Amino acid sequence: MAELNYEKLSDEEIGKEISTTDGWSVVEGALTKEFKFKKYKEGLVFGVAVGYAADALDHHPDMFIGYGVVRVSMVTHDAGGGLTRYDFELARRIDRLGS
Image (cartoon, rainbow, N blue to C red; front, side, top):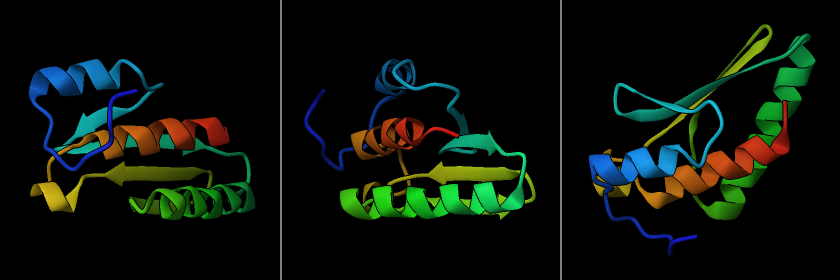
């Protein structure tokens, strides 16, 4: 894995990084993925787990928790709203949480 830093990635680097994730896409400049759940409570518990993973990395996404769905989306504010290696590292950590 490349060193984590807050340097904004180029489009080419974003393409390379996104290939290391499962189901993530760039939507309106943010790295985004929706996770599906059978019950609201499952999504809520997942959202809390995402919060703990984000806090451990000190990189915090936006989350929408609805009935049966959790949408996670992130950019690096320290990079002027661009995507950095931190966004992709957090995406990989979130994927390891499962759904």
